[in-house]
Length: 132
Image (cartoon, rainbow, N blue to C red; front, side, top):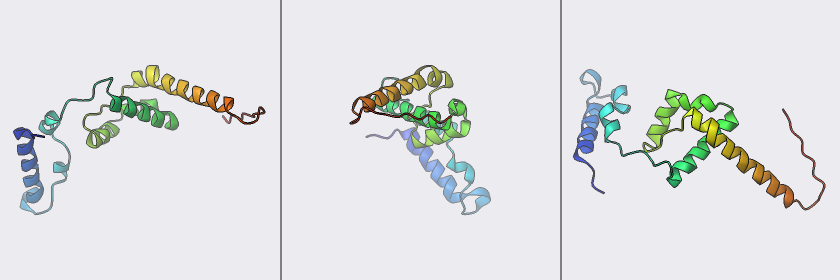
């Protein structure tokens, strides 16, 4: 895989800043650990909506949001930065997509899973308890 010259240059400059540090000291400057605008532009394009990894990440994110009970967490800037560092090509879904598409899809998957388990139950007597 050929690395673009601009990206190589940015990485070299960043490494020089780290080794140089603030005020000529040999300790790294904390600001150099965060991506700059130029580095963000040098990153490859995001995943397509139908790409398998994008769909899997969306559903895992939705599972996390549903278990936490906070669908608006996708708007959190710190979480967005964390996700960008972990996988620069993945964009968190917006709150609207989570609420209108992903949560109902997850709900339907859970319902189908429960129905399937009930059908496969060895005994016909099943007790369901719901704690609210």
